[in-house]
Length: 172
Length: 371
Image (cartoon, rainbow over all chains, first blue to last red):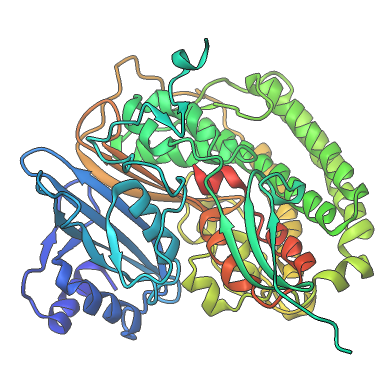
């Protein structure tokens, strides 16, 4: 199926509501999904025989800065059986006060098991919490690391457990 | 009187020699049987995705060497294609063939390490030295080509850094003439060895459904019986013009999706890679090797997810550009990451010794997981 046909069918399944179909130059067309619709959409994409999206190719977090502060989680899906791909994004507000309070999203790890580690990595790097994840903790960084490095406003701590993070200070 | 038994926590790594880089597993065992395995990764996390946002597009190319240092050419290739597609940069035909040739040579030596260390992990030391001896030859060829033996930094946007030296193609042919019989010898030595097979057949079986769910890619996916190869099914560079077969796991060689099938798929992929390299040599066009631009590279705003078939499977770059001279965001999706995420599930209920075989068969490499 072509991406646009997939979108048309999604509209019929989860309702037209707040979905936004984006086609721009030099971009794969993608669907913008409100966070409440994530789970019904993911289940439909996995289970519906026409979609049959068996693989979560890639799951990425993006910190968009500029006019408004927001986080995006980008789902790249692929169906090896049907040989088609589809991209959708979920956008989360990140207000300057209480930034982490709003960064919550339902997990899709029991729909695509591959998401288990991918979501942990996104939490590690962006601080987005995935609700319902069975084993939710940091993945690559130590559990007591402060901050989430891929945020655009991340400041690296000067030291970790008394070990300097810069080279200058390390030499006596 | 029955012997008292109790669970034991066994710490495997982070320096265990069979774990292919710095990995750590925390095992809860009951005797020799694992009932919970928690992989602890991140020891080689260097923040490559953060670095990508700080350096310009060409400056990031050497970092891609370090994503998977056993297959630096393939990592270069994926990144180069991503930037070229977004920036509309043309690549001359000679460069395309050189790229595919070095990428396939790199696949051969990466698989050599994979199958060599695999045998080593199982306890067969000699095949590893044979594999390294063959690999050394290609390292010499690459050194002649670009001066480096491991992290090549050979690709440039719009081509490759250096043209082939005089007589290089003859030397590659000589290597292939040497290598193909050696591979048959390697098979006699280890691949068809009864002890080796008994250790692997039926161990660590991954069903097709699990493989898809955990987004396994490359040889690991194909060993589970799924006929999917990006080189053939979503061709990039000049793969569409080349003839090769895609080896897939089959019950002929044990159980579909077991450790032995993963091993055997890699062996047969090396044969196919050699075949591709020969075709590249035969068709190598004359002309420029680098469509070089003097201008500072800035990509137009846009985003793209580009994937290529690296030795450890799909290597995806998700690049977001905001029209600057550096990526706004670059996400790197690697094969070892998903391969490692399935270990926890597969490891419960198997023996400690089989975990070593399982990890070796998945061909995970730590820098690719941790980036």
